[in-house]
Image 1 (tube, rainbow, N blue to C red):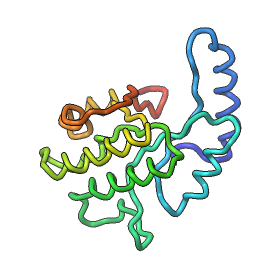
Image 2: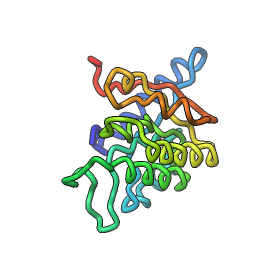
Image 3: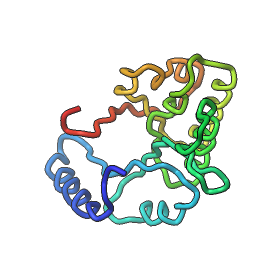
Length: 172
């Protein structure tokens, strides 16, 4: 929703130029963040196989119900984290994604940490550890109430962590 697919060739070309320019100083990886929605499984395969992309980042902000409806259309969203965590695990198991962006943000609609949230968070971490997928601690999430849950990070042994910052605009 943030970049039109017609912009993808320019995006890859620009980042390949930066990758070349800074090869002696930093490692530049070219990637995309996407939701995992089973309907688009074939599309993720195309992206995964695409020349010029180094990685795909799973950013699960919504999920697809079995009837094909999207979770953002739900009237009641207090238990949204259950579907988000299940979608994250399916995305990880698909083999297309290298990193899960801000997995603890799945609990953004929850008011306090519960044993069920702990159970779901453990399932996500176990799945990521099993598939050797990185989980992202997101610095911008830390600035927002209920986007960053220290409980998620304190109770789980995460094998692979990457640190990131959601910057969706030059001004952020």
